[in-house]
Structure formats: C-alpha cells, structure tokens
Length: 624
Image (tube, rainbow, N blue to C red; front, side, top):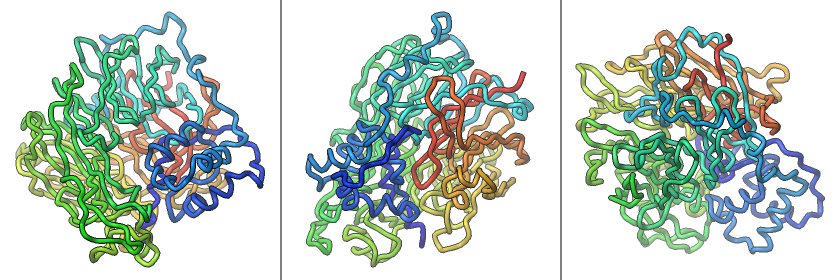
C-alpha cells in the first residue's frame, strides 16, 4: 500500500549533500531556471509527502558544486539526462540564487592550538569502526567508551560544530585516544574530543563513510571510501595520504554507501549499484547494475577478488509501453557495512531488492562469502521476488513504464536490508547471524549453514523501516529500532519504537513504543512531526546502556536490560556551535551515534525522506 511512498528514494541523491541553514534571497519569478524546475523536478520535490523527495527549500540551500555532482554523476543523473547544458546551468542557478556561499576553508577557524594538535595514536580505541568489532555488535565496554551506565543520566552537551551547506548528516565517528575522526563537509576531520577543534583536516572528496581505524604499513590509519568509490588510507597521526585505490569492481559500476571493513590484510568494499534510480527514466533500458563485494590488499590497494550478487544484465526480450527494451537481472545492492565471521573465515553481507526481472535469489538476502576466495558459502533470502524501482508509484496505474509490476505479477515492496549483520552467541553456545530487515523482521540464522533459527516481526514493515540502518547487541539481547513513519505494507498501524529480543530464544525482552511530541514550538521545528518520530539510526551499546535517537531529534538512552529510559536530550532546532557555522539539530539517522574518550557523539539533522534537516555534530559528556 503506502509503502510505495518510498518511491522517491531517488531523491536520495540530494541526501548526499543537502544544505545547512544559509541565507537565501527571494528568487526572481522570471528566473529561467524556474521553468526547468517546474518541468523536470516539481512533480517530486513539490510533493515530498508522497515521494520522499527533498523539498524545494532544502534544494535551495544546497551547495552549487554538490548539486552539479548529484545531477551529473549521482543518482539524480537519469532524471537530469534530458536537460541540455544550458538548462542544467539554469536549474542550478535558480536553486542557488541568492545563496550566501560557504567559505572554501571553513575548517581554518577550527584548527586547534599547537599544543592540542598531537594525535595520540597509542591511546585506547573507542568505537574503532561502525560495527565496533569484526562481529559488528556495536557494543563498547565501559573501558572502551570511557563511560559507565550510571553516568548516562548526567550527560550534557559539551560542544557542537556546524557543517556548512549540509543538512543530511548521519555520519559516524571513530575514536582513538583523545581524537575523534569523522567525514563531514567533504573532509575527514581529526577532532580533539574534549573541545571539538581540528587537529588536522584531509580533503576526502566527499564521503559519509564511518572511517575505520586500522594498522596499515605499520601505522595507525583511517580507511574509508569516498563518493566516487575510491578507497583512501590516511595516516591517523598526520592526516597524510598513505595510498588510495579504486574500490569499484572490474565493471566500474557502483558506489560505497555503507562503508568498508578491514580484516587482517584485507579491505572489504561493499558495492551498492542497482539501477533503482535509473528505472524512473521511461526511456532508459531498465535496468542494469547490481551489488558486489571487492577485496583489496590492505598494504597496496590491489584487487584480490570480487563477488557479484548476479550476472551482468542482458536484454530480456520485453519492452515497456514506450517501446523501450528491458534488461535484467539487476539490483541486490549492498547498502550495509559487511561483518566478519572470523571463526569460519567469512564475510557476511546483506542485500537490497531486485530492480528488474528476472528476480534472483540474492535479493533481500543475507550472504556468507569465503574471505580467501570470494566464493559464496551460503545465502538466505528473506523475501523472494521483491522487484521494484523508482518507476513504481503507489498503484500500478500511476506507475511509470519501467516499473517491474508491468512485466510480472505482484508488487515489489522495497523490503531490503539496510542494516548490518551481527555474529553473536545463541542457544547452546552456537554462533548465530542476526539481521534486521525493513519488513520489520529480526532474523537469527545458523552461522554454519544460514538456516533460520528464529525470527520475530514488529508490525508489517515499510519501505523506510521496520529496521532501517542498524541493530546492536549486548551479548544477551539484540536491539531493533523500528521506524515505520506511515502505515504498514498492508495498511496496518505503524509500530515505531525500540524492541529487544533474547538472542537464544528470540522471545521479546522489552519494548518502548515511540509517541509523537508535537506540542507548541516543537511541533513547528520537527518536519512532519506527527509522522516522523520513530527510531531509525543504528543504536550503540555502551556498558549497560543502549544509546539511540529518534527522527524528531531526541537522543534517548535506555537501560539495556530493562528498557528503562535513563536519559533524553532534545537536539531539535537551533544549536550553538563552537566553529562559527550556524547550527541546527534535526532527525537523528543512519550511522549517527558513536562513542569513545568519555564522550557520546551524535550527528543531528537528516533532511531526506521528509525528515527534519540539520547540520550539527554534537558531543556529550557527563557533568563534573
């Protein structure tokens, strides 16, 4: 049903870089780019409730260079393919007319005093990767985090920095000693954890990957991929490049949305190509592109092996209503960050939906791959024949000619996996693979075979949740944040909240149901307040506490065992920053929660999907 509102995920392209609060003058009504916008963009961007598109005010705050990149290289490229060079310039001119440009060297004012610029690479690691460990548990001990459960009630904002011309944050930090590393505003920043000043700045080329702390060539290094699929290794002490290499597979297709992992002498790169956006173009021969995994040598960057979720697309013999040939299979992208099963020498990945027929058995799946050879060990498909792309609207009669529904029976649901898998210990000491799906399911599989041990489902799922970005475990329980911003797949009520399940039995341990908080001024500050209040960000276990956040901008910390709320901090609205960039808090999303050095780090603001924009990285510490 309304899960098809997922439709404009497309407009995810503008999620990569949308804008911060900037001064925008009134655009002249006769601006030539207005006609281009009305013809090529307005249908989606003026109807964000149905399409999940970025709103026009969001677009008008986006940096010109980012707009051009998204329209010519990113997922909006097929939507802009019919524009001439002049029309493209007119459109960008219209969207950015009157903007107050962000300073090129906005980080200069953030540089630490000389005495605070040393990065203690010998210090203890906090969160050293998105998963926190090879098993992707997203769990830190009190010692690793420098925080104890009882200190959570005393947390307060220590500092915040604003990122210019962005309102879609969602990035995670990693922590080494007294330094936090984060990709923001097109740069990799080494931040002094205590004050937020920058020890060094590296031009990352645009990335929201959580950098991985690893030993490369005998040096503590940061490893991540940028928006062009380049893998960078940067010296953690100095911010100098060690090496960079193309992380894309041999076909040259795809990007790295989640982030890389490092295991021994391997860097594992997940590829998210799918054709989901290009399918919206009725003249495109839909669809091509598919998920893959690339293994690089961690010392040199050379490619060792590739795994592909399917063969290359071929013409199927079908044509759409405009006479355009169709291609397939396509899809099964890997949006999430891989997990390492060290005991079995495997990497575990989760995949998205197919985007054209024929359907494959690798979509909406959990897949185990041998780390030495790149060969598939096992796979479990959670939902078969989930074939969908951006041509599909709420109903078949309103869908574009490339919607897969016209070429086979049924409707795809966009019930992919955006969350990472976890390796945990289940009943009888048996290793299990845990994963959360947008259908609302939490799965537990036998780590040896991939067979289902148990599953639980919260609600009916939606294209923006059930489980959207990540899960976590404290060793006994698995924690599943549920988004559900609108009615479920069958029209049932949404079930946003936080849900805990016993790992051994699958039985519910506790639950916390989210409620909208829209009274007074807060209701005006939160975009779509009565709908966008669920839990979507990947949570993090710190000692005995579960740190999470909501789409309406609240940091919520639970007792991991009982589900009792220990602390709540509201980040929505204006936030005072230490670097002089105007700050605003918004939805807490994606990979936006991290910890280490006695601090909690939260990215606040996520203007995609009709949510609340913002542009601040907030550091929390206990009151003295």
